[in-house]
Image (cartoon, rainbow, N blue to C red; front, side, top):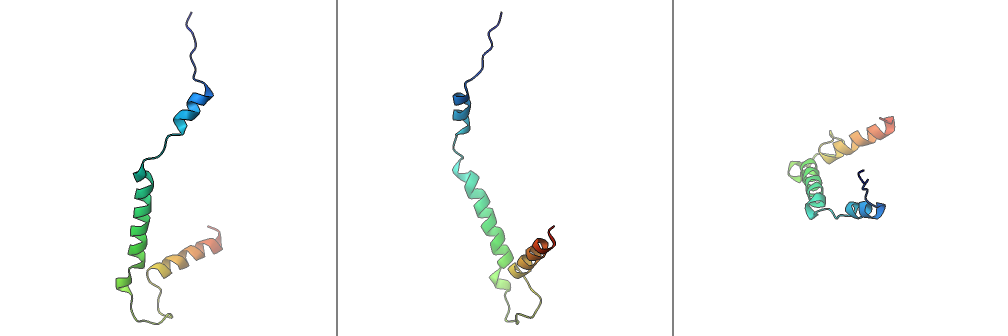
Length: 72
C-alpha cells in the first residue's frame, strides 16, 4: 500500500511568493521608453503649424482616441 503525499497549502503559497528578478520589470520599462522616444522623435519636428498633418506622437494619440470613441 502506497502512501499519498501532498503538500500543505502553506508550502504551495510559499513557492508562489518568490520575487521577480530586477530585469523582469526593467526590460518592459526600457522598451516602452525607447518606443515612446521613437514615436515622439523630436528630431523630426518642424516649424509647421498645428493645422498640418499630424506626425509622431500626435498621430498615435489621435488613433487611440478614435479607437476609444468607436469602442473597438
